[in-house]
Length: 236
Image 1: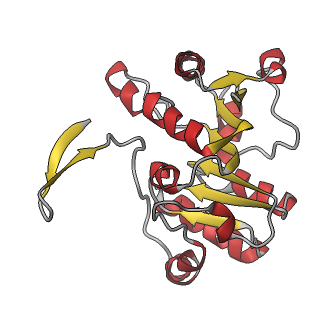
Image 2: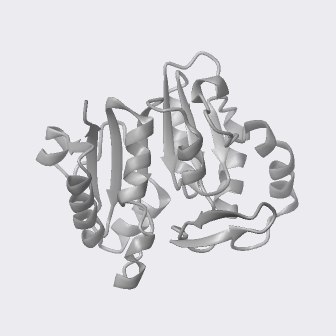
């Protein structure tokens, strides 16, 4: 991390390392541009401090967050299956957000809210102990040693997750990269706020019940990589 100066205020601030790669791909179609102009403002997540996520939805019994939802396959499938749960999806990749906005509109998913940007903005804004489940599915592995500091699972973000996940509730992590799985298990053990559930320990190669999968997961399986599914409980 780097300390710098806020030129408008003269105050020091901390510049966080990026945890994601490219932010956009091919140009958006006119329809996708319309979705950004009309749908995203309606379901965008405010990142003001002390955000109560329940105020973003009407009559939900839980709130879940997906960090880096990619093309939104998992997020939208979960939301369609569980209208009683509010889902917040965070994704910096423009084209993935566009695809998800289209699905939200077409499927009339009233229980989805989207943050187009860094998930840490949302985690920082949330009130403590307000989430029941967080999904981190196939995060960028940043495989080179000098890039490891950009991995999402780490000291600062685990502290943030521990702050917003209710005691006894769940953090799910999936990856097809063995080194990232080892890294995750080590970082979480060192952090101490989460413990792997017995079900996860017994069968890490079995997806959780009701698992809808993701486009990236299907590609990994086609290419011969084996997904691993981890589930951690926030210590009470």
